[in-house]
Length: 277
Image 1 (cartoon, one colour):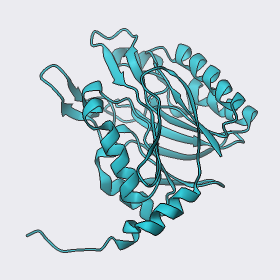
Image 2: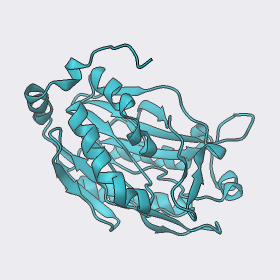
Image 3: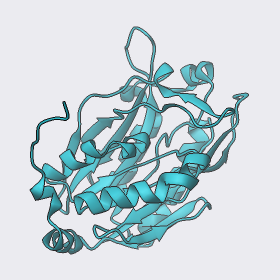
Image 4: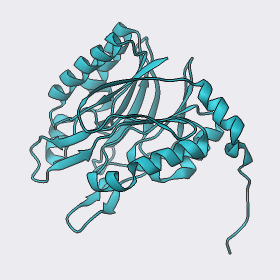
């Protein structure tokens, strides 16, 4: 089947981001894609928490989610909204970083809240504490579709192979890793991590990404690495989108999953063990 990644350069304006995403979605469908994926925080890229409180919504009121569900139905496609930043009812006011799989009827098939929070000091000048603004999820999610079982993850999750192994053991054919990756860590680790997750699991890994410098009201400028990636189950990179925002269409041959696992069935060889002491 044909699938497509939408590589975005989102700002902190959800309305502008939605307009750009919808235009790209239409373009992807015109190119024949039946499964389309967007990056992490499709609706709003921002480090300004006050601004986020002003422009974000709860899931049931989110205009981006409602519009993209409507578009998926009108266009008759499967759509992975990589993630949306959403308000929650948590007492501490933290947001959710939530991925959605939408079917061709516009229904939400699955939701996944990012489990691992990006709390790091990349360099002396680049420090992130995602958990200050976002509450972590706690549930791994495998979504069933007519064409594949899809294991859902988000960005920093890619550094935690146990999550990917568990999804593959549960039957995943495709692992999604929508991201807004740091340029520093992206240059060092992005390709290696995604290829490793594909090779270890025998799954396709599809990673739609944010790219470039993101416009907004925050004092701290946000840049992301781009290079949306599709990795085949044997570890070959079949799409690298570089750093330009746009629509990237590719062929998804799911027979490759069975072939790769037939050659090296490591997922079925995982054994329990004791220690270290």
